Length: 309
Image 1: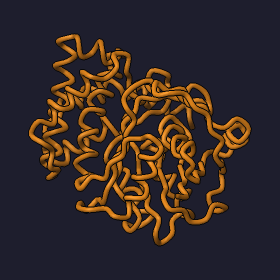
Image 2: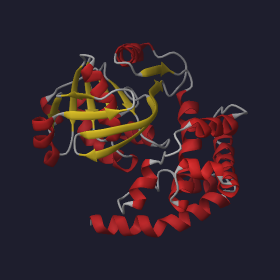
Image 3: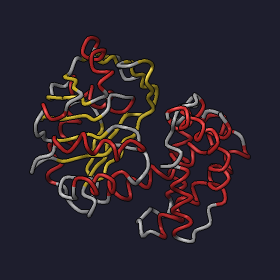
């Protein structure tokens, strides 16, 4: 398959790198200032599942690639709107566009710019971080990708991409209810990210401290209530399943939002904790935990954004 990956960070480099390693025709579209370095050095992935290095194609000009079979959108959630201009030249009549962002709003931003014909829902799971440009460390969780039609049901056009991931050794599934899959991840990640960012503790400390564990569970219940108010078909045991996942995660684990805020970088606060607050207010669902978390974290985010101006 011809696969374009938008972004060569912790998510895009890992999943795109695995696909390239398996022999797929993978092309990365990234920032102009990073292209020369990446072309010279390629990607190095340090992984608990085995290290590897690849030298796929890199460009800052998507128009030179033409139409592709699939686009993996792997930028940060707050960069999706801007990325749509990068994606447009890659999309032909048969192209599928799969967002891998945290949060649940990326598909609607992509549809607003590209139309709904190409866009699927998507979600990935991995604990990974950028050590330096082109060098990624995967430190936990079996990497996986789930995607499917936003309208639900079968997704025959996604089968070639699913099979490409599986050939690359990545667990991949097509979901008949990808919206539910996205909210299931959002439930645990937004709650974990908010609590982790406020406490500045890893997940092992959070889950083993009675008070912060209770705060985490309460945050998850708020998100579950919002999802059900929005007619998302979450399983009845969604919070219990999320906590089971949390309890099985590496104790040293932190979220990307937590790491960004701690480092003074712009983060996905607005697309995670902020989104829960917005959704709660729109649906008249009480979200006091997330209101508290958002209020505590907003000054740090605001300062980081000002430094970008």
